[in-house]
Length: 357
Image (cartoon, rainbow, N blue to C red; front, side):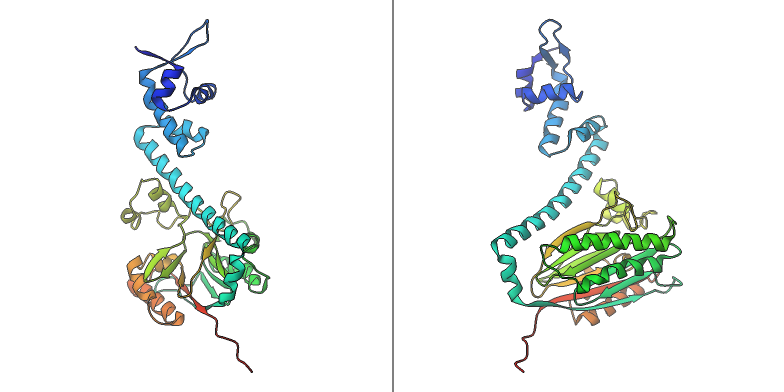
């Protein structure tokens, strides 16, 4: 066996001697031999592969505790863990990027100048129970500031979804700015969770998704928990701006399922997050930049599971918001109809000039 000094080993695996000493103390990468008299650390050639893996994972920014777990796994499972970790990093980065854009604009005065563009929302909402369900447990709401879709589940699902949306409605009259909107929205979602908890009366079978957009006059703030979805139609392209909090989406993120397999998976209806939830079930919150001409869609899973994204794009591309929500829900009912289907559509449009009189 060939022994490498800590310096030679560090050079070969692209880790510093200081890092190697730390990883020894943490029992993440123990030397193969330590001289009992001098205390010098020696490493074996066979340890290079693990050391390089540790170096690569550190460059990804993975915490040391998770690196230890990944290094202990077989290669195929380790690959799934890295994929899942990076999916979370990308989602977090997107949120921080949006916040950074806001801060730059806010501090430079761009956000104040944007308000002079005088944009507003033109909106409509529609919901239908479908052909099979005995009742409609969805709640769809569209107002001058608030757009929301909630999909309840359990014996009090309709009350749960209605309670969640009702808890957000006071934001219609709140004093909003891009600087405080996320804090206000987070507080309102906490209130929504408490309202759903009261409706559920302790039952773990009762809950609801919640996907909502709140208009500040220059930006939209998004809150999302569950598997209802938000889409943006811009310049003819359809972009999903939410990430499903579902069991099958977690399996897709980990590389265990393809999107095609997920569509028929027996657990496709199971949620990983929903209201009322607990402290670990934090919703996604972010600011979204808008342009005149943008069209936004909020939809329950009864619509998005019935219609592929390309079909949604086609149906969303024409008519006024009231026409779009009607044709989307009707198409979902025609394609499937086994679940409630709900849609909210809002256009970002220039505000008409005030009349001289």
